Amino acid sequence: MTVVVALVAGLGIGLALGALGGGGSILAVPVLVYLLGQDAAQATTGSLVVVGTTSAVSAYAAWRAERVLPARGAVLGIVATGGAAAGAVASSRVPEPVLLASFAAVVAVVATVMTVRQVRHARRTRAGLGVASGSGPDRPRFDDPIVSFSPTFMCRCPRAVKVLVTATVVGLLTGFLGVGGGFLVVPALVLALGLPIRYAAGTSLVVITITSAAALAVRAGTGPAPDWILVALLTAAAVAGGRLGSRVADAVPSARLQTAFTLLLVAVGAGTAWQAIPVLT
Image 1: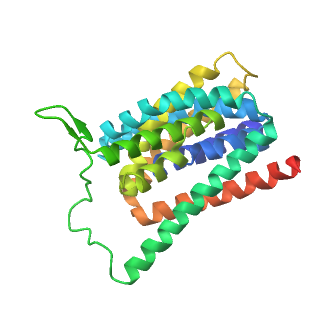
Image 2: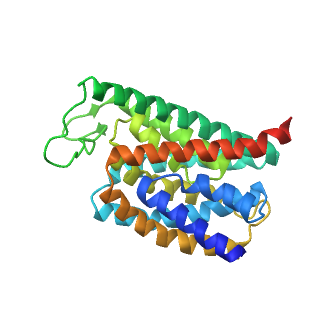
Image 3: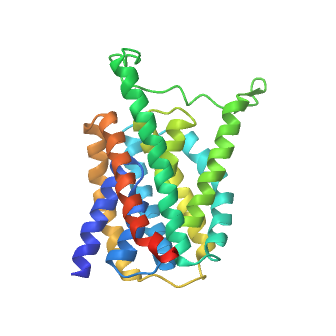
């Protein structure tokens, strides 16, 4: 039965990552804790393996589908590694209930922000204030460099500051909570950098791969090791689900993907809070 749970949950994690560019890790941690019997420290470490591996495979599929802005993903990922390392060290110094309650709180905040944004967008659309998408793909103009030294020095400094702050915060929370960070990176790319959700989802997979590797490297050899057989089963199923999720992302409108992402955040945040908060009181 445990094997079946791991395989089914892994498929769901992969679907979330492949289609939404995030959400896999917020499924992996509760699955490992509440369904597969791992403690919080084991689950947060194991989830990095599952999500990091699946993100790398899904990022390649998204890149082939032209849903990735590689430069943006690489810059955010590299900048976030320092924060991820610091967060991973800090997480080893807090009790398990605090770790899970923090996890639930962060998910709740992000879900609220995304919900407010969707409601405002819906109101603008009903009022006829939306921008027509045109007949071609909604390809953003974010491949333009933020900082350039050739032929002359150029700096879009306000956007550069947003990238720095966003990446650092994402890295800190990724390392602290032991997650890939997609549920943070996607809103950050949408809200701070203005990427359409489809490109934010694909680009976030690059960031997740980098930050997961950084946080896992810091955690290596510290704390209790997860059940690696369960982690391997979750990873294999998640990779398969990620490939399917990439196809879903190509077929489903962006607005529906964003709604699904927000609903996923609300559900998982509420469930984790329900389990974690009574322990603290």
